[in-house]
Image (cartoon, rainbow, N blue to C red; front, side):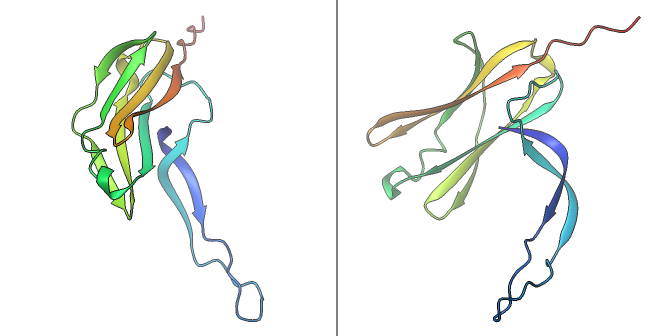
Length: 138
């Protein structure tokens, strides 16, 4: 689960030449990208991105295309995500969902991803919170 559109600095680690001497890092860049939430509550309206990576046997290679994903609060499903955005990388794949939190009230929520596997259903979940709005200053 990631907070969308955050300012991050990405840089390559310095390499080593054949004699073991440090070489200069190849790139420095400042980009807008996602950062993990790290347990912090979101303010209503902050966009949220859920990325789930799964590595699986060939027999289950399409299981993320039919995975069910939803947001729940107090054990009840609030809404379900539509068609998944799936990216493959070798025997692994990721599914990505975007959530606009504007309509969510303050409280605790759970993102669920459930897929069918050869050995039965596999469900992943992650919790997140929407913070109560701060009172207006007088």
